[in-house]
Image (tube, rainbow, N blue to C red; front, side):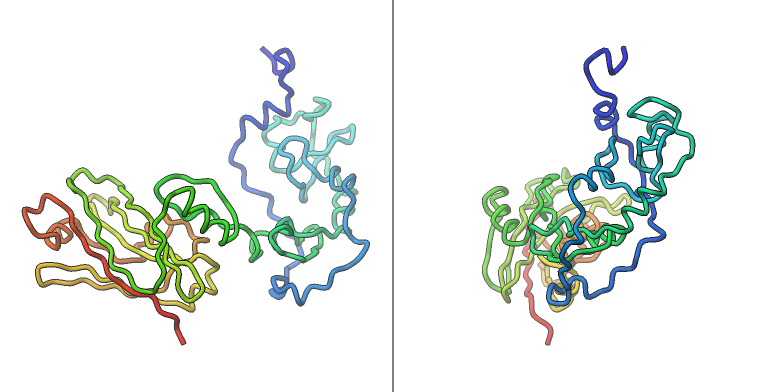
Length: 308
């Protein structure tokens, strides 16, 4: 049965069945100077913003995203982005005529003359950028929202740091602590059943910043291990101003780690899989726990400090 006969538009059918397609590479895009992130250095230009009708012309009818070169068109003038062209099997999604390889150079030139505000304007970015530079800027904009750093579930919430702190406290019931030192105990009654287990995230507030302490189990090859690491709730250039140490031990032995907290721009999985933290093999963890080695009882201590 066709999409039209069921009352579902062809566009809706395409949007409901997305494919992973690499975004077009904008070779002609202008380099964005580094100072665009500093609002004091951006001169706001009057009368250069694109009208909504012009922006509508640059919206792909299938994915609804902005189009970048090469912009394709059919013989009737209907346009389509290069990312969606392989999905429509060489048929215009608007009139169903054959697409061919016609490029809409006029629309590409119109786009080149436009300047648009950053899409993170509501988060505080006041920059205005040439159309073909806007995408590159937004991928690096310091005002772009952060993903929720909670690791116990695939949370899709995004926002600025104050919003995420409230979200972690109220939405995930995360433990919130003030101070730059910590002393945490992690317990598991049957550690041999731990498969990618994640303990509750803990957030620390110190030096006017927020830090996330992670502790979890995962497989390192065939060997089960535990890892503890710290993430900074902010960008990487700020995270480098801080250092932290972790210690774990028992039975007269001790392991220590010192490092730089990773920005929450890096996912917790990325940090974990790069082994950037205190890694404890299961046998050593059980040795530290003492007793009959059937219960995990690890005490992790540490501190955070600001580099001078």
